[in-house]
Image (cartoon, rainbow, N blue to C red; front, side):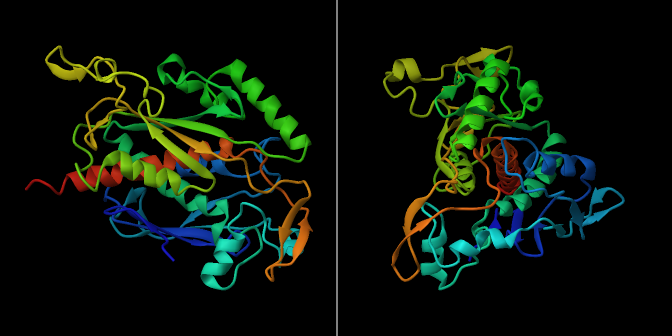
Length: 358
């Protein structure tokens, strides 16, 4: 089982949804970076369950405990180990699906691949594993901050309620002012109402998270197999429930001609820049110094509180009615996960870029 992400910055995660703890080890993290543990915990709080009426009701403090790699507030260059203990499991909620495969979950494929599965909340395939990614991403953000690079994500669509694709039309400082993490107050209210309606019906709904990376230097990424957008796409599609990735204008400008789509270079007071940014800050797989922006599509959460047809592990027809505490929409809690994976990827590729010249 592959549990490690990255090249120079390597995050290895461990733990299950209903096990003792979730945790990880970060290797290759630069030494002498100021580690603001309160900031890391704040990022983790953005992901934790039970934070509003449109997220799962599971009450977990999700307090991070650092075990190594930090001394007197600085990274030492040694592996940074950490754990977050699981304190609010209700494993009995899952006994009714012990021998049943939940539709659109990893139950069937996991059981076929490994010959067994932890049915309690999905075990290793649970989205609770993203705790480790958020902690790793928070540390990456602290390093990127020293380089002047920022990573900001927000909910841009829930169901059929969507924002304009141009992120520059919004004040991204307003993202944390509402529980759905949308920078448009009016649209946020509509999204929240829709999620509440879906939740009351025992159903779920999906949407889109948009992410913007500012301050990224020219030159990150490789022209062939290490393209920066491919790395970002891989990082995003590795998040639970992610179903699609598009950077720059993506599919939206496929009806345009090259003369309309091309980003024209010009001399911006002695600095080469582009008049437009349809490329999304990446050209030929390499960052060009403009803002990098992309969108990640998330499906409706697979666990719904409605009766569904399924089969047992022996292939017998049955019906299933899920119990427990589940998110009606993954978007609000996915925002910090998208930021985390983007930050880890950019920091990793920044460090990789340092290896090409003596």
